[in-house]
Length: 164
Image 1 (cartoon, helix red, strand yellow):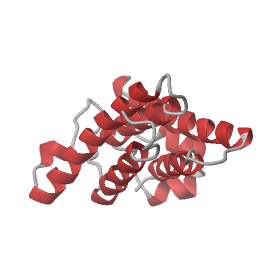
Image 2 (cartoon, rainbow, N blue to C red):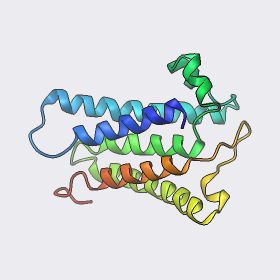
Image 3 (cartoon, rainbow, N blue to C red):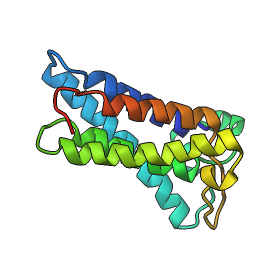
């Protein structure tokens, strides 16, 4: 797992944890939105790297020292980046009742992408967990896809009283 993927997983998990129902302070609400927005921006920036044809990993080297980047060669998988973009945007929109449904639909799409990866790993279908771009075709790791599936389920179940 590359450092940016780990950071995205942490940010999505923190956003879900901080957005739990109950008494919430304004600072906790803002911090949850900041975590979700940062995860979405991380996914968008990584997808932009893929679409522009840049070599994978410049964002990793920007955020983390070279010694950490050397431990995990390459960059984040494109499917992970797309899932972070959708999940982060969904978590960002799920804070108010007005935009809750749209946010939940984005999380459902992210969950579908993730479940394809899990099924691909389970049955050995490489096209399910590998997206090909011009500059690299890093597959999503099995532990990353399972963690993203758990995060998507957590985001969908975070506000049971609001419905879909």
